[in-house]
Amino acid sequence: MTYVVTDNCIRCKYMDCVEVCPVDCFYEGENMLVIHPDECIDCGVCEPECPAEAIKPDTEPGLDNWLQVNAEYAEKWPNISQKRDAPADAKDMDGIPGKFEKFFSPEPGEGD
Ligand code: SF4
Ligand code: SF4
Image (tube, rainbow, N blue to C red; front, side, top):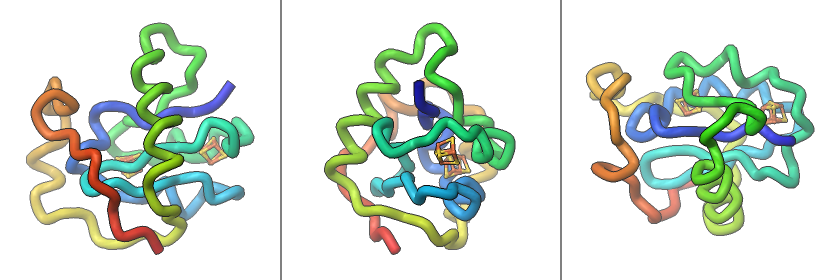
């Protein structure tokens, strides 16, 4: 089991999650974060910290595609363990459906 970052993280990136992860297993893309499924120790601490409610346990149904996205990009993107400011329009983007199709970027973020 692992936790996964899902659609509503895209263009939100509040990053409250990265500060609490005891094993620093978040990785940063241009406009979302992912969790490395082999590094996550399933502690669940990050889930309630995410204001966008984008972090879910992979035991929830229908998350197979997200698990794949997290696994693939955790290998490609840089590690992030320190919170930075969220994008200025993060609030406006919260809750917009279908963000992956509209806004997902495979480009890496800055990392720490
Ligand atoms: S707190 Fe939630 S929305 Fe923000 S970066 Fe972490 S997973 Fe993404
Ligand atoms: S469940 Fe725990 S180990 Fe996994 S990403 Fe969240 S804080 Fe890190």
